[in-house]
Length: 156
Ligand code: 4NP
Image (tube, rainbow, N blue to C red; front, top):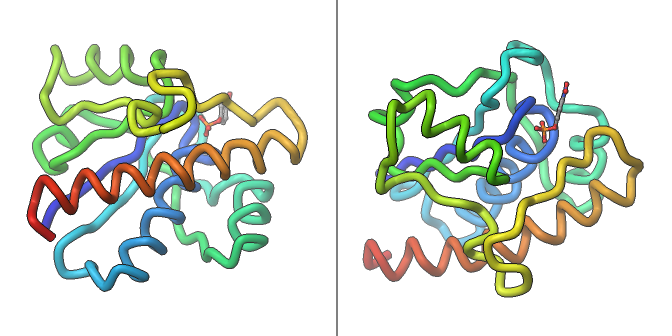
């Protein structure tokens, strides 16, 4: 079982949405035995909380259930997870600090985006509903590519 952790700042908007979308893709591909995913935030502001209501609404609008409780990213996650996927460059840098250095398993979400490689997944927290739809579209297409990458890499 390969384990993937999606990481943002608050763990209530981008990373729980990535987790929910990717979990759905894993189910659709029938790969639950081989792939698992979770999410975390580099900050501790929302530990124990449900995702933002706008995150849940945008996922449900696309037929995707959300089930997550906020947790903070910790060094130990680097040992437990095979892939650590940061939503933006700031998350990426904070993760390197927490991990005590670079790690091969540390990736940037939009390195898998066919449109906008290496850019940040924009933080939708202070914006409106349109920002959540934009994030959904970015994540959906990036996660399709990430799924292809995992299938190729692990012969799934
Ligand atoms: P996220 O968005 O990192 O995508 O979950 C944010 C959520 C909360 C805060 C910032 C970003 N906050 O400052 O509380």
